Length: 162
Image 1 (cartoon, rainbow, N blue to C red):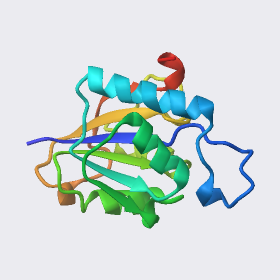
Image 2 (spheres, rainbow, N blue to C red):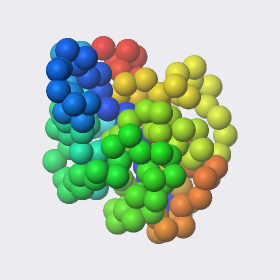
Image 3 (tube, rainbow, N blue to C red):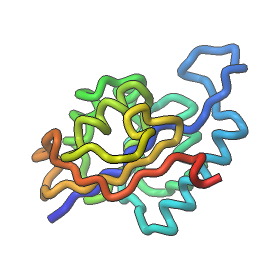
C-alpha cells in the first residue's frame, strides 16, 4: 500500500493588512497562484481525500481557491509549525491521499526531511509561496511514516504555471 502527501505552502499573502499575522489574507497574485495549482492538481489527478490546513486566513483561502471541497481539518497546530509538529499531525491522518497546507520555514524543512533523495529543482528547499510537492510513501498507515522515505513524484511552483 502507498500513502500520498500533497505538501503545499500557502499562496502569496498581502502585507498591506494592518491586523495580526494570523489574519493576513491572500493578495491578487496569491488567488491566481492557488487557482493555478488547483488546476494543475486536477489535471494530473493528484487530488487528496483529506486536507490538513493551518487556521491562518492565508492558508484557509489557499485551500478554498485551490478548490478542495473534501473533509478538511483546520488545525491551530499547523500555524507556523515546526517540521516535527507537522510530521506528528500527519501521523494522525486517515486517508490514503492527504494534502497539508502550512507555512515556511517549517514546510520547507519538512519537505527536505521527507524525501529519500534530494530533487534537482532549484526552488525545492526554499519552498516559495504555493509550492506544491507530491510525495509517495511505501506505508499502509500514516503512523508508520518515517523521514527520508518519501519518493518525490512531482513538484511545482506557481511561476511555472502562470
